[in-house]
Image (tube, rainbow, N blue to C red):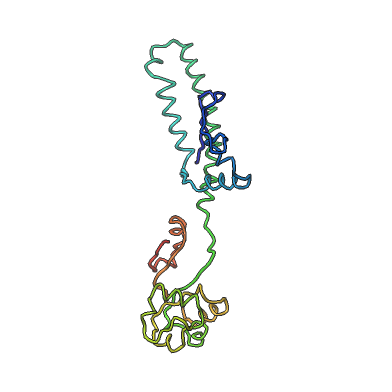
Length: 242
C-alpha cells in the first residue's frame, strides 16, 4: 500500500536568506521556476509524479498485521518475566492494557486490510484487450488483397525498416510497390495493423483455423497481466512480452 510521508522542516522559515541579484536588479530565488507554472501544469505534474511510482500491494495485509501485533504484544507489552513476579493488581493492569491495544489495533488493521484488499481486487481484475493484430507472411494472404497491400505506404515503410527491401531487386523507393514485387517476395511479413478494418476482416475470413496457424503471441502489456492473459487455449504458443 503506497504511503506518502510529508516531512516538516525544522528550520526557521522567517529568516531571510541572501539571494543572487540578476542583471536587472531583481533577486533570484530558488523556487522561481516552480512559481512560473500554471495551475493546470502544477496539477498535471502532481498527478504524473503520483502515478509514475511503483508501489507494493500485500496479498494478505490483515493476517500480516495481526501476526506482527501478537509478536509486539508478547514481547513489548506483556513480558512473562514481569508477570511471574507481579502481584494481582499489576497483572490486571497488564491485561487491561493488552485488551485496549488489541481492540484499537484490530480496528485499524481491519480498515487498512479493507483498502489493501480492494486494491488487490483491482490489480487482479482481468484487463480488456484494446487491440488485436496479426503478422502473416504474404504466402498465406489472398492475392485479391495484394493491390491494396502494394499501395499501402505505411507497410512499405515498415518493410524498409525491418526487412531492408531497398536492397531487393525490382525495388523503386520513389514508386509504390507492385503486385509482382509481392509475389516475388512471399515471405515478407504483413502487419494487419496497417490494413483497414474491411481488409483485415477479409484476410482473417480467408484463413482456416487461424489459432492453429499462429505459432507465437506478442503481448504489449505489463508482465503480470500479460501472464494472466495467457489462458489455457493460448499456452501452446510462445509468449513474448513487450
